[in-house]
Length: 139
Image (tube, rainbow, N blue to C red; front, side):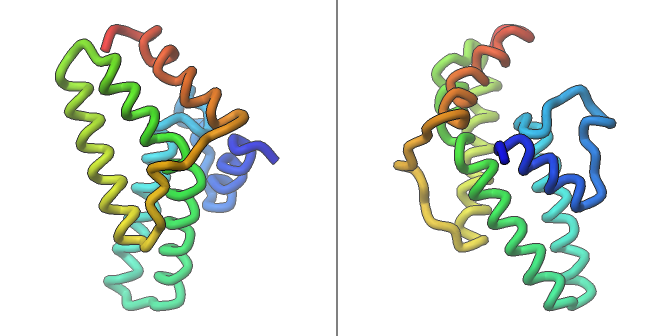
C-alpha cells in the first residue's frame, strides 16, 4: 500500500475524510499537520479525563504518524523552502515548523532522523513539493 493510501486509510479509521473538506491530497503538508493537531487535541482531552489506556494509544498513534508521514520528508522540504524563499516570512515559517516538529519528536521519544535517506516516492515528493508550491505564487 502506498504512503498516500496508508494515510488516507488512517484518516478514515478516525472517521475523517479530508478530501471532502478540501481539494488537497491526503499527504499534503497542511492535511498532515491538521491530522497531527487533531491527535494532539485528543491527547489533551484524554489527559484531562485521566484515561490512561486511551492516552497511551493516541500517543503511539502520534509517534507513528509523525515518524512515518511527517518526519520522513518535512525536514528536507523545510530546508528547500528556506533556500528558495524570496520572502523572509517563509524562512521564518520553516524555522518555526522545524522547531515544533523537533520538540514533538523529542516529546514523543522518537529517534532523530536528520540523516535519513529518502528513496522512491518519498524522495520524489520532497523534490517536487517546492516546485508545486511555487506554481501557486512566489515564495
